[in-house]
Length: 460
Image (tube, rainbow, N blue to C red):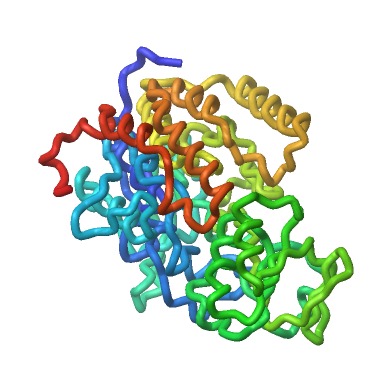
C-alpha cells in the first residue's frame, strides 16, 4: 500500500556488508535515512570474502559464534551465469584483466561487490572489523520513544574489551545464511574418532591425499567437492538421500572409478566404519558433511518474538518483517533458491520505503493471517519446515516486487537461469564452460540492463 504521509528519516543500523547488506544500505540512504553498516570483517563481500585460514574453527561448526564467516572454498565457481546475477542498475560485466568467464570464480564476484560499493559510495557508511554482540528492544519509552533498538558492538582487532552501545530507530539484519552449519543426526557421530568436518571449513583437496573420504550430501557443494577430491583421494564415497541422481552426476560417477554412490548413513563406528542403510560399509579416514546451513542470529534478542525453528525464521511477513516488531526490525536475504541480488534489492527497497512512510504494511492481523496461510500451503504441498524459505518461484519474486514498485525479472534473466540449471543437470563437469544459450545471451546484452550505464562506465 502507498501512503500519502510525509516522509520520515530514520537512523538505521544494517548488520552485515555482504550483497544484501550493501544493497540495503544503498536503498535506505536513497530513501533519505541515515545509515550505519556494521561489518565484522575487514572488507565488504560477506560470504564472498574468501578466508583461507580456518585454523581454530570448530570443524563441525557447533560453536554459537563462529570465527570464520565465509564458506567459500578455493576452487568455487558460480553456479549461475554472471548475466543474471547483477543488481538491476549495476550489471555484472566482464572486465579486462579479470576473470571474464560467464561462470567466474568467487573472487570475481567479490570484485563486483567492491565495484558496486565504490560506484555508489557506500564505504563511508561501513564500520569494518566490528562484531555485533547484542541487538535488543529499548523499554524506556518515556526517554527514547517507541520502536527503538539498542545495538552493542565490539572492535575485533582492538585490545580493549570495550563494548560500544548505540540507539537506532530501526535494524536491518543482513548477515546471510551460508555460515552456520546444519548437521545430520547420525548414530555414533559423537564418538567417531576420525576426522569429521562440515564443508563450511573445506578449502582445498590436498589434506585428503590418499584418504578414503565419505562426502555426505549431493547438493552443489557435495558434488563440487567430490569431483575435486577425485584427483587426490584414494576413494570418495558420496552419501545421498536418494539414489535417483541427475544425468550429470551419473556421468561423473561412471567416469571416475574412485567415486562411489551410497544411500544415507545408518551409523558410525569407533573403528572408522561407516555403515550405510543398505548394509554396505567402508572404513573411512574422513567425513565431510555437505549438508547445508541453518539460520543463526546469536546477537538478536526479541524476547522470543522471532525464533528459528527447524530452519524456519518466523513469524516473518513475506520473509522480511516480523509483524509484532515491524517495520523497525527487518531481514534481507532470508529466502533461498532465488536469483539473489535482484530479490535482495527489492527487499531493501520495500524496507526503505516502509520506514520512510512512503509505503505502509498491512495490519498485524492481516500479516499474521498471510503468514499462517503461507505455512499451511507449504504443509499441504508436503514441503518440510526446514525448506520454508526455499522459494524456487519466479512468479513469487515478481509479485513480491509489487510491494515497492520493483520491476518484474526480465524474461531473459529467467530463461538464462533455467538454461543453466538444465545444463548442469545434463553435464555437471562442463556446464560452466559449455553452453548453447547464445541467442538468450544476445538478448541480455542488448537489454536496458546492460546498456543503461553506457560504455564509459566500465573498462570492458
